[in-house]
Image (cartoon, rainbow, N blue to C red; front, top):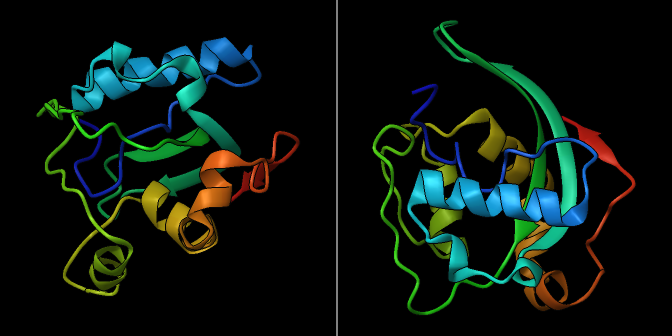
Length: 149
């Protein structure tokens, strides 16, 4: 696997400027492939687009690197959603509160993927602090920008 550090999954494999249903379908496929979430768990409209990021990050050991255009989407997870992580893609997964994420990201002994670190430092806190607007309005939607991080 390319990486097994925290955050190196979930809704990050966009395909560029493609039709809305295409990127939604592709992200549903990645949820199934990486996290084992069945593709029929979400309706297409349940996955809300927020923005796109373009980033480049080498690994600490220089063995691999990432250079990706990633789509950032959000959804409320169904209460009965099951996770069955693909061990070739995911080393560990957990549900976490905003406070737990803050504690984990400030712990120097924990390592996070460049993707997660960049999303966390630039967007995640504002999206999470305004969760109702993030989920149910267009307040945080940005179709016109590709953020270079």
